[in-house]
Length: 168
Image (cartoon, rainbow, N blue to C red):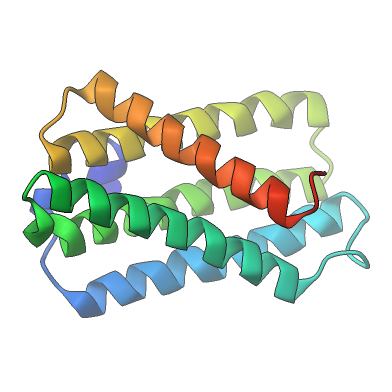
């Protein structure tokens, strides 16, 4: 998945495999749960961290993304690309999660937050670019339009998570 993260390959280059799709989803989900725990640990809020809450939020994020991609591909007559598009996105997400986990680990080890926060923002911005690249490739869009679409999906996900958390 590294070539996808580096924008060297698109979802069409990812093998069509439902097993690979489920593996990529499991990997990004597991890494997200571990990262969530580490963030709580680094912030001293591990007692408030809830596994069930984190998994629920993760499920909402995945359902929104899968729903959006499914509908977008279907409306363009490109439903056959669904498995590869989701595999590329979840696989790239797992790679990005590993990078983010490294950053969170450095915080736990004492790297100042003033250094970590800008790096975290850069990682988030790159993940939008990567998802935009994947969506643009799958939907036959301009890359900038793909990034706008990826940002739109992120905003919808963020609104849903905020609603789930009671507007916090």
